[in-house]
Image 1: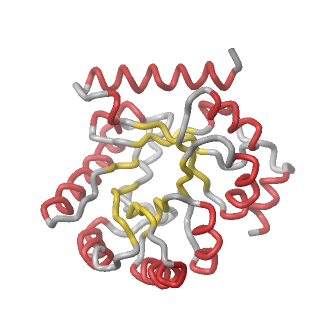
Image 2: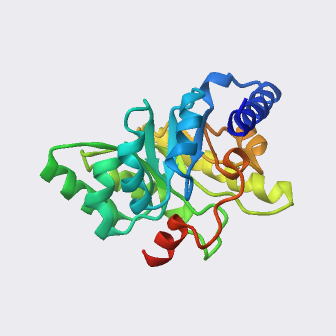
Length: 240
């Protein structure tokens, strides 16, 4: 068994145990492979082990890995901050965008999708930790933005996404996830079909699952430490 396959099995075991402890069906919680800076070769090992969902942070990486990965059945979610000038490119290679956090971005996506006669699944990103260093809309604006976006017929709202607080204090992390769940309920009450919650990573996936996550995003715990800063993909990150 490869190291990646071993790590995948360990993550799935943690997810299954968390679901059991939270009295949730394991089938409703999916694993998304966070593949920033990870080579296509390593990703293919994970896909070969049965994984079907990957998440890229950079449009350049999304583009570069596409041809190598397209023979492996999978879905690709864009999970990085999306700049308006990258919309055309991201729509070529992503099946879903998890980071829609402002009306101007949604409207530009709608405009491009109308031109291409396409639709795309999206998640609305919410900054539930209230940290200025993180992207995502303020929680109090989520319902209003969701209602506005719901009128853009090329965008299909599938759920909400957040990055939990990086903290050893479990209760503070839990509050981030509880807040996203609360916002989800508001959206559902307003007939916005936000069924998915993308929240939780390797360090806090158990808490996220307890609070209702349906997609866990894990990278380093599966693929190991990210490449050295002089690597190709790191240089792409610095230059874009």
